[in-house]
Amino acid sequence: MITDSEGSATTPNGDAGTVAPQPPRDETKLIRMLLAGIFILTGIYALYFARDFVMPVVLAFLLALMLTPIVRFLKKRGMPEALSATLLVLLSVGAIGSAGYFLSGPVVQLANDAPAIGRRITARLSELRHPFEKFVEASHQVEKVTETAQEPGVQRVVLAQPGIISQAAGNLLSGATTAAITFVLSLFLLASGTMFYEKIVQSFTRLSEKKRALRIVYDVEREISRYLLTVAIINAGLGVVIALGLWALGMPNPAVWGVAAAALNFLPYVGALATVLLVAAMSLISFDTLSYALLAPAFVVMCNIIEGQLVTPLVVGRRLEINAVAIFIAVAFWSWLWGFVGALIAVPLLVIVKVFCDHFDSWSNVGNFLSAHQGQEQAEIDAETEASRAGTTA
Image (cartoon, rainbow, N blue to C red; front, side, top):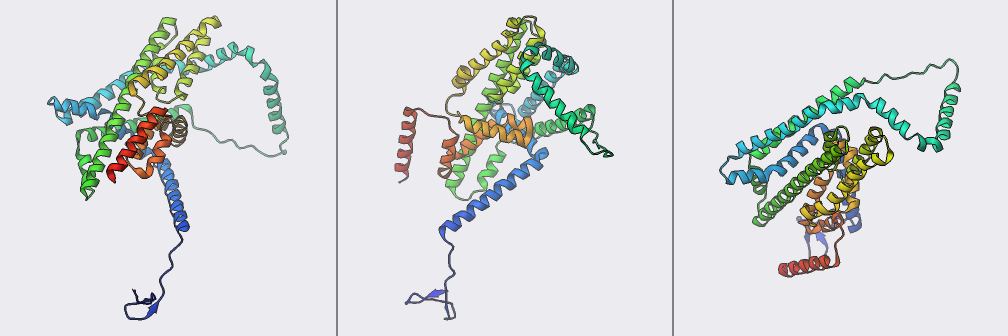
């Protein structure tokens, strides 16, 4: 199509034509938002229905990111990457397997004693149940009335649920499959070295894009490995301290509660609360006096306060602090999507998203929302940094 001197549009054959009308800018923006929403919903559905495949892959990448600095440290000392990766994965499998073997006895015993434990907890809390007894009795009466009010001759159909043993066997098989895929894939990722980084850089054509991609990849690796390693070490130390303290107080199975505290502490806020409630419940049935029974949960609360307010901010630093609202949303979303494993990896995935957003100006608002509250001095420093960067670019 050619435009003549009078401004009318003509075709290459000289025939007059009209220019195709362009959609308004608002409609284009709306279409983009709708397409983005459809893409997000499709991605959520894919993550949910393909969780048996995607979840171990994500776990393998996170484990590889956490162990990569150790592999590089050993490589500088002359150890091949394949050998160091194999040793690290075998050590991880051995540590998890040994912990599961030694804790299997107490855990099975607790599961067998669960009915008796429930009755003892109910008896200890009977004084607190008096205000609610009338409400519970009324609800039972309503259930009986609804059952007797059914039409005569109508048969009730009850679907048989699978037994506990079959459910446990299915969960154990699924967990073993997930663990096998995770460790094997992480072994290949660690043994491959920088091959994936080279492939990512080679996928770009311009030199500036290659440098930017390489910088983002190494920043993500550095921040995630530092975060996961430090948090794992801190949680392990917390579990040891809690186990020793509960052992000194005479709490039964202190190792179980130490491991539980270390694992649940990967869940911000919720994990510490769950640990305190579990220890409090077992302490109520383990000790005779109420005052002494409160010592164990009080000790756990003190350890979690020291860890959350002093140790973790001092070791991890303020750079990767995440907004508490974003943490709760991420934990709720990933726990709904992938269960307990999703809740455990919610914060590391949120850190990855934040690191990516910090490298793109168009996503800076998202990165700012994910960041924790900054003081006035830090905000001024960040503003000066952005201004100097803009001046350099100009």
